[in-house]
Amino acid sequence: MGWASHSPYNRGMNRRRFLGSAVLLAAGPILSIHNADDAPDLARLPVIYARHEPASVDAVSLVLVGDCSFARGTANQIAAKGGDFDYPLREVASLLRSADLAVGNLECVIASESAEARPGSLRLRADPEAAGALRRAGFGLLSLANNHTFDYGADGLRQTADALQAVGLNMVGAGPNHDEARLPSFTWIKNVKIGWLSYTQIPDPPEDVTEREGWGRAWLEEAHFEAEIAAARAHCDVLIVQCHWGQEYWVTPYPTQVRLAGLAARTGASLVIGHHPHVSQPTIIIDGTPICYSLGNFLFDQFGRSGFGVWVRLDKTGIVDVHRLDLTPGTHPVWKLP
Image (tube, rainbow, N blue to C red; front, side, top):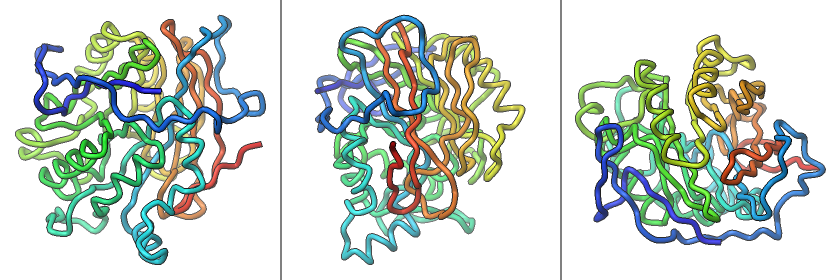
């Protein structure tokens, strides 16, 4: 099943205006490896949210997961497996590919060894071959608005975007400049237009003038948060907002997360997805909008930490239902489905 995407970063396309900033529009379908035969049995999955109205006959299916990194411990595992970049996601790939679109938070830079790390002790870089592995596993869209995609500065972030685009992966939450980084991406699946916004609140490494003037991430600026959500919602059928927020290893959301989730729900977000704490946090419903404060880890070298995915169905009128996908995260994640 093919799907098409409009992204802030696609070369050689026509421009239009959005919130006073230019956004580049992609044209045509992106390569799909969708295989619905491996979809989970929803009747056996925990229900996070379900609306009263039935789904349209041909509802769109999404699977969303939390923090993903091919760096550090995952890279060591790949080396131990003889350089097999497909090994880390082998156990979870069939389910990812069974959805119309799989989405994750890419919490590392994908760049060459010559990339220069910014000062600091926790800098995550993966080999460029990681991009192809993510695509083959089934991912179609990745959020880059987090505290590690600027670990190697503007050039590292640019290399990451180039690597993703080269294999047909779309992105949200980063761009060639501060304004374009904040723009939404749009995907069309089964005639449903889905809008995506992604932001980070975690300043590591800190934002600086380089990020303002060159390649950078989408910072969650509260003065513009509601207006940007409302504007994006006016251009799509369903709007999904992702936020990199909260405190690492806390299993309860910060009051700031709760307040911002409420703002997003009341302003037009159809679904709010959070990450950064590296552990699972609660799921709730605010004004009819499902909120997942933190999906926790997915592909990450922190053993014993929690994480889960969500299987989402939607149609042109909104979110149909959201189901929980339990898993054991790590450098070789495995689903724990009934």
